[in-house]
Length: 248
Image 1 (cartoon, one colour):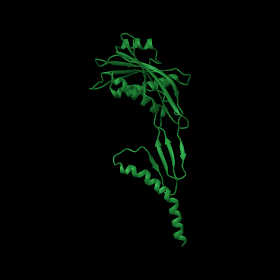
Image 2: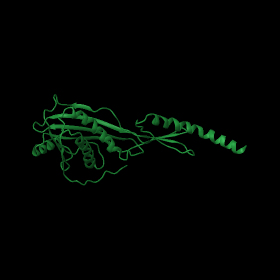
Image 3: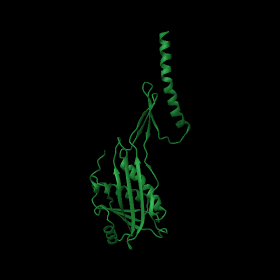
Image 4: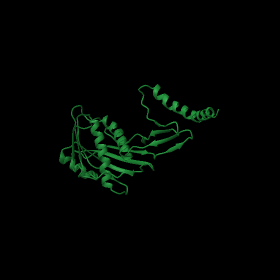
């Protein structure tokens, strides 16, 4: 019978897709409350696509200088915009944006009782930053360098490298120096005939890379700083409105 033959033929064509769908969906159902990062887009008339979120690839921070002992009291800190060391367009904007992401991340970790961000005194220069911190009465001053910055968008790899430094205001001594880089690969698509896989990057890969490095470095500093248990005081000195970084 032609109708039956057509149904059998269609079932045979769809069978590999049905098997794939069950293989992808069953672990999520069996896992109960488990979190599954993969997303599957499919219908019975087209090729199923498995979307995977792209994550930052990095090594742990490299600690070049660190204190011998933990802080014995809550500290106040002044944070200034980073200096970009590579030839690039809008270096001051990039240094400001990268430093502000680190500042905001460390605010959430409550590393200091007061942590002021001064947007008007960048890019970072050690002597000028220490003098400003003394004037403001901060215990430490935090600055650093963007040593590599490439925003590849969805068509190329994105990468950021940071060097963050913390100075004791009273003595002018370098007490922390940490470096780290992070990479987010470009979007990839793989076609396996019966299904395809595609990676998805965040809307702002550069922010995501900087945020994850700030978390890593902040975790190291948290073992030294006497973190704040009570209300956190935060300030931002300088212009509130800044031009947004273009997305590539």
